[in-house]
Image (cartoon, rainbow, N blue to C red; front, top):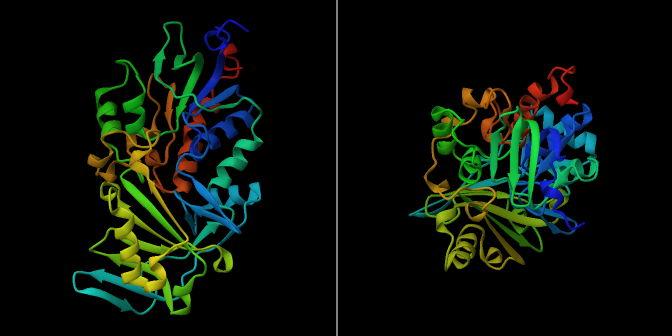
Length: 364
């Protein structure tokens, strides 16, 4: 077809969801299940957002979200419904503390709380959810550049290759990223603009480092794989081995600003100082710098530090005359920063689109 289908005036929908992370996919699934004509626009060429795993037979290693905790029913129920196997985080063993005086060993695991992990990797949750949706509902490589109210009602949503019309929009990306990448025109309140621009992005200023080994040798030494360090570069470390210790791995968080020349060597040297010579040579070392992910972190991400803005009251109500709904984990009133928070925010965000007057011909 010669004509650019993207600019076809018939590309109209009840709801457009921005972002195919777990929040956007959960919102899309709920809307589709309720019979709403919905499309989900994702800037990346993959779904999952901050759920990102890399294959490591017999399982996977998570480079983004990893855990969920007791009481987080939404994520537990979703994993069960999708048939994604989960297992308990390894907790047994002692804790290491590293500071300028060296490394101390403290009895018991003083860092990790009981948690569960996803055996095939956290991003399986997103991929399984996306696989259940009808073909063409999720559009990859479709970054949204503008969302404007239309004079005739509804919203106009633009990507580089398409112009869509929708009655409502669900923004399922971090608010600071949305404000940096999407032109909302002058219609958002100055208070909301200020809030969204200053709300931190969960994981946005963090690098996650995962070191894989042939075996979980630290367990044999009575260590939990849990450590805290005041000297770095990794500030907090945990065991990331799969069920039964395979694949065997340790992971740690570093400030994204620490990543640069010599970072890899500094990490392996630190692992050796903490866990002994066997830790100096991982089979693979994955460094996932989330601040460098243009579809996760806005340029100002390192300066956003006020986590009390998570779940702010302004995110709990729609903007643009009730047509724009916030759905990323940062906007969740509870469990913000967790997968559970993303699912809770998605649940809230679709309430209005799902209760729209059925008699309205535009809502069909």
